[in-house]
Image (spheres, rainbow, N blue to C red):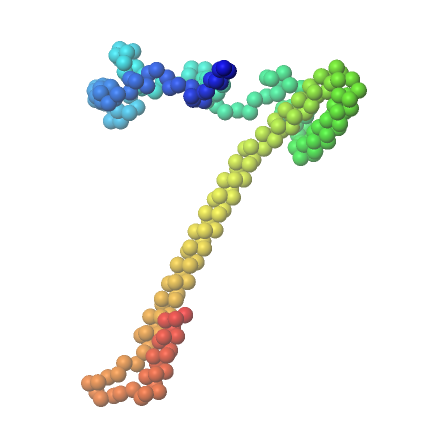
Length: 236
């Protein structure tokens, strides 16, 4: 009888073992210790207090870790930095196919990224066609062409990433412009409603009211025309 394949119960790693220390009693204890430390230091906000090394072992994991000294930390094997910067091609030993940032806009020549991106795209197509030809004739010589394609793709992607600050700035401008247009539209709608209300009030104030005390009565036609004018103003 064939053995049944082993099924994976969970695709995510198990939680860290110190999650068991986050009990209501431990949370209340560390809050009391923070309040005591804040009162002794004269600080009003106790959440910013970081307790010293004399903290009990079961409470050490309940406070956030300090910021990394070198500005880098690892999460699931990946390295992250506090200051998010675009890595340079030279750091990854990648051949640079366009001018270095320090060498751009020299001699009165403008660095046109769009033109360079078009050139890289054409080079990608040409190298891909050459790769297909090499795979058909001599596959052992295709490794160098694959390296060229890798360098072209990385340079292309790196040059696109240099547009990220410009994209963020333009996205912010577009968002603020849409908010400004929406605010102006709402303001104009309020002004239109105000003008309409003023016209209605002016129309109501101009109506002739029948004076029963003095015995002056409106004619039938005049009363009808006045009521019609009032309703016409209200329905505008």
